[in-house]
Each structure stands twice: as C-alpha cells, then as structure tokens.
Image (cartoon, rainbow, N blue to C red; front, side, top):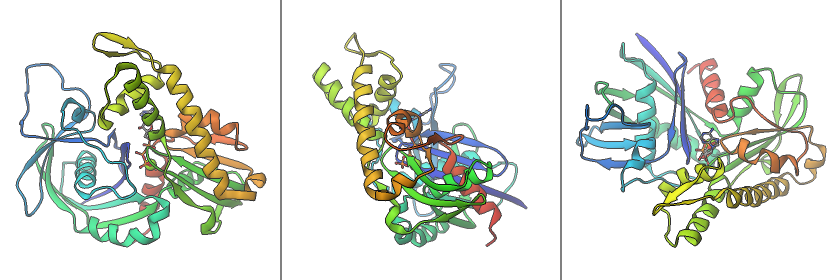
Length: 337
Ligand SMILES: Nc1ncnc2c1ncn2[C@@H]1O[C@H](COP(=O)(O)OP(=O)(O)OP(=O)(O)O)[C@@H](O)[C@H]1O
Ligand SMILES: [Mg+2]
C-alpha cells in the first residue's frame, strides 16, 4: 500500500509543502471562492496558483482559486493571525496535500505540520485531533478528484524545524545559538545551546512568537501607495505590490508608474529594528553571549542586513523559506507512531 509522508507549513504569507518522495510546493496563502469551472483552451496558460475543487463529507463540491491564482479575483482573502480561520487553513492545507500526494495509489498519508511557538503547548493536541478528523475529496487543476485524509498527524513548533534541518545538514555549530524564523506575521524565536552538534533547548522565557514580520513592510507600502495614488490597497493585493517594491519594480496605477523602492528600503529598516528589539528584549543578557544566530523564513533575506547590524554572527540557513518544513519532515520520518 502507498505510504506518503507530507510536511506542510501553512504560513500567513506562503504555504510550503514537501513530501517524503521529494515533491515540493509553494504558493501564497490566499484564496478566493469561484463558481467558474475553468476557461480552458482559450489562452495557453492560467499563470501560477491553482484551481481547486473541494468537497467536505457534509458539504457540496465548491471551487476555489488558490495561491497566486486567487489574486485574479476581487474576492481574494488572506488572514493574518496566530490562529488561522479554519476554512482558510483547511483549503490551503488540502490543496498542498493534494499536490504532494502521488496519484498512482491510495493509502496511508502521514502529515507533519507546525504552529507558532508561543501557542504550541496550548494548541498542538487540538490541532492534531482536528487534522486527523479532516477529510475531503479534492481535485486540483485538471487532475482527478481524490479523497485525502490523514492516518497520522504530528504538530511541531515553528523554529524547531529550522534547528532540525540545520542539524541534519551538519551546519549547527556548537555554542549558544539563537534561532529566528521571520515569517509574514510572526517571528518565532528560541535559544539553544549546541553541544557536540546536538541542541539543548533553553527555558521558555527565551522563546516566543513576536507578532512582527514581513507584513510590517507590507503595511508601510500600503500607506505609501495610498499617499502617492490617493487610493487604498487591499491586503490580499498588497503582498504582490510589496514584492515589486522590494525588488525595485515599477508599480503601474492609472497609467502612471510608481517606484516605491525607497519607501520599501525605509520600511525594511524600521521593521528590522523593531524585530531586533523584540528579539533582544526576549533574550536579554544572553544576547551578549550568543555565538551564532540562525535566520530562516521568507523574512530572512529581507531583514538579514538590518539584523546583522544589531545581533552578533547572523547567518541565513540553507533553504530558509523551507527550513521548517524540511525539519518537520525529518522529525516525522524518524519517529514512529
Ligand atoms: N524568494 C521569495 N519568494 C517569495 N516570497 C519571499 C521570498 N523572499 C522573501 N519573501 C517574503 O516572505 C514572506 C513569506 O515568508 P514565510 O513563508 O517565511 O512566511 P509564513 O511562514 O507564511 O508566515 P508566518 O510564519 O508568519 O505564518 C512572503 O510574504 C514574501 O514577502
Ligand atoms: Mg512561517
């Protein structure tokens, strides 16, 4: 029987998924309801993202645009919160799972997922139970509908995945080490003491989820866009505009090009300082004794320079956006039932 192992990191900004047999998916955590069944064959492509049909056991088959594809709809929504609304979370998770499961057979599917560090102890059992009870029939793009359910589910704290992935890659040097996972909405931080390549977790006072991340930059860009154009941006569309601003691309609105690059640089500096201060406040005197700081998450590359000016020995881990998902996959693969 087919035995699939999946690791899905449903973030506020991006869904990252990996399977034991080496598949990978990544798409924006955005979705939009649609009734359209596809507009195939008119243009050659539909762009990134997915058209998804989901039927839950007690419901009817509903169509969604998921990921970047959802931005083609005025009904695109996303959520910034510690605890994601279940309806959004489940559609994103099941889309990733459907994309990751090999269709050649049906069988047992093990799922590894993560939650923000600060709510891990309180939420892990409830989430695990909910994931085990989750099932649906789901089709993505032109692939056939098929049932997805999880026979085993494990939940891990964000940031811990980064440590496990670094350990496996042999890039966890000894000494007091800070781990910083800067995501869209949360920055998960923890302190470990590495001895002989193995991590020892420092006590709970040194670990938390700060509610700061890339969205702080997005917020600044939204304000700047409103100031310059006189119209507000919706949250769901602002992520794409922010990405353009960060990468120096011109944003065209009403036939005029706007360059928000300077505003983006300033926003990165301000948000980076705020995040660094939150980290320094949590770690207190330990900051002075740090030997390494490992940076992960989509914010790692954006904030590396600012953080390196404030914290010692900052280094971006390999594959920073996937680091947690890689760690969860390793943890679930190496542990039994
Ligand atoms: N190469 C990249 N491709 C896409 N997004 C990137 C890239 N580098 C940085 N980003 C930014 O990183 C953000 C997402 O980072 P990440 O996936 O770590 O967050 P998340 O896990 O979804 O959020 P959270 O941990 O708060 O739930 C994106 O919104 C984007 O702005
Ligand atoms: Mg994350």
